[in-house]
Length: 146
Image (cartoon, rainbow, N blue to C red; front, side):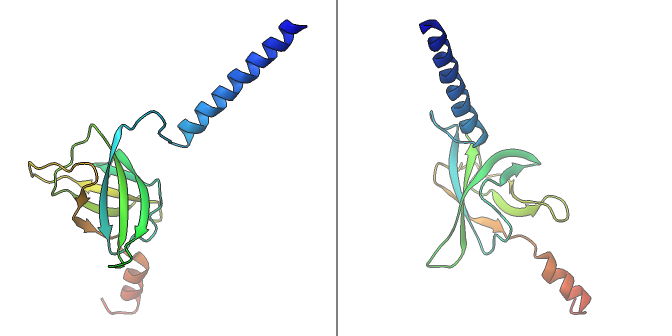
């Protein structure tokens, strides 16, 4: 009788460990250290961008958006991005908010520069480009102001 109860207890314990592992992996949480570094950028608008959005270089994912906040002094959007440690960004890298497809999700595209100086943990990308406002562009075209 005790052997059956022990077997059930071990089975339940292993199941809980598996559920915990999947929760961490699927939630993209970091528990045992980080394989990324944080870089910030400021945009005049981040319309449609969400936490967890991809950060890409040449169409390849190199990180994720980790936070989106409003700077209370300058009223611009401040973005924090976690970039993979094996990706070295120069200090003249440009960040643009792009749309995947016509009405798809927003993501940040990084265009590397040619500088020898590299961005470190907590550095800021200064050259940014906000997303194109398609509604405003279409309305300008429809009403003839273009």
